[in-house]
Image 1 (cartoon, rainbow, N blue to C red):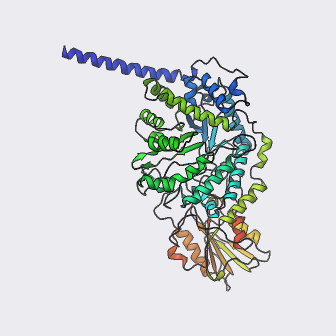
Image 2: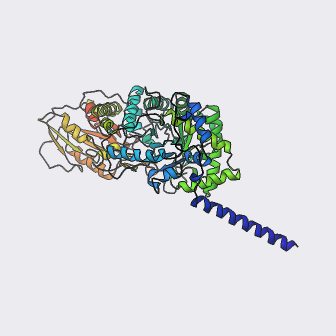
Image 3: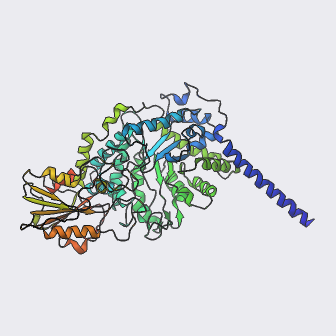
Amino acid sequence: MHLNFYHSKLITIIIIALLSMAALIFIFLNPPANEKNNNCHQINLPYQNPTLSIDQRVTDLMNRMTVAEKIGQMVLIEKNSLHDINDITQYNLGALLSGGGAGPTQDTPLAWLKMISEFQSAAKNTCLGIPLLYGIDAIHGHGNVLGATIFPHSIGLGATRDADLVKRVAKATAEEMAATGIYWNFAPNLDVAKDIRWGKTYETFGSDTANVAKLGLAYLEGMQNSSDGYFKVLANPKHFIGGGNMEYGTSRNPQFKVEEGNITINEKTLRQVHLVPFQKAIASGARVIMVGTASWQGKINSDNYHILTEILKNELGFSGFIVSDWYGVYQIETSKYNSLVRAINAGIDMVMTPFEYQEFIANLQEALANGDIAEERLNGAVKRILTVKFETGLFDRPEATPEGLSIIGNATHRELAREAVRKSQVLLKNKNSVLPLSKSANTIIIAGSSADNLGRQAGGWTTEWQGIDGNYGISGTTIFEAIKDTVSNDTDVEYNQQGDFSDGSKLADVGIVVVGEKPYAEGWGDIANPSLSPEDLSAIEKVKAKSKKIVIILVSGRPLNIKEYSKNWDAIIAAWLPGSEGQGVADVLFGDFSFTGTLPIVWERY
């Protein structure tokens, strides 16, 4: 009898397991998007009426939605992960994104517009026609699009400490994004950077909490403010919370050193240093917050109910939606199902999977059926997402047209970028008032890896995720070209990247060496000692030997260790990552404008 009891129990377990497997197979073969909805393709419904309040429209829409349609709103997919564009309709997908470099086959503004329009058409073919929210990392201009204006990265804007300038930069970026039909920007970055070894340092406004909060707020306002009654482009403050304080060497990823690392500071410091910029942003209209991939005191942020629900939603009264970062949810456990359950119950409303949406849908449906995620939690998340979609005008705004693409990279935006460049330049050293230089100098020699390289000026998140090293894929002016265009016609300007100039009896009046970092982005930019390469140091020595005075221009996303060498240089400029308009560097180098930038982050070694 005892043996038969266990045999029966074993058989029962096997039957349950087989039934569960059969259920999952059924879900994959018969996706929940096929769930019948009797509200298909109706017109003149309350949620389609722009004269009603957003709350009324959201309530009406949700009352018409099936569970499958609600689930689709909670998943954010990288567009290259779509197996078929018709899957947007089939699975009721609510949000897509372009990762760094993920665009149309032909990288032109028109191709971007057509691609986005095709995605939106697929969304309109769903029963309820809920538009897609399409996101992109336009963190220093619409940098994935060929011909767009590339502004200085945030670390450079942080050096300006000019809120009005940052607001105008954000507004121009929003205009170029909206022209391609994209209305969600994964910016601004409100991390407060405390360790320059972190590869995301340049994405931040620096290490001063007050400056980060002030400029982050300005960016938010410039991005979202519109006269049309909805956001020009939805801003997305990130990365909640404390990523700038991750400890070196604690990364969960063996390829990184800081990114995905652990934060050990106490809650008081977390609040005083890192929470303030988010408090200011939420109070001023932030409607999406992205959670970072860091851990605080050993607990991954996307799994932390205390910071996501108790602090962010309840204490700060944040009523928008919380989105996870790239694959961040699935780092909680090895089980994707368990990770998803924990993240959504912690407070995540939209999951950047960013890959297998079928698996996400199956897991979320199973979690609802099992009671691991309550229907109330599902409805709460979807209500937040739909509310923001209505606020962004996705149901009502006119479609972007090819005629509007002329704003991308226009003269007004490039002049604004030039202004931002010159205001971001920080004069670190000026021995014997070497600067400003004379435009009528007889001879100027120029060298260095970053002198004639738009990719290095622009840094990461430009054309590609990790950026490019060269002069392709970006339209703009290099620092070398800017210097040539600034000096008199009688000035002899010579350039050699390595500093190999012919021997002559006379020294050049001035040698300019533009050096710095190769482009990088998160993770891959985590290095123990940010400094100059042997090639750049060699070029500096060669130019110094052939010049009466030497000026070093540093193109970098963070402070570099130059203390050992800087005593031998006459002038040093921190140009940060200026972007496409190198003329802004020449503007201050030759005295058309004064240096006004100040260090946005501690620079200990120069």
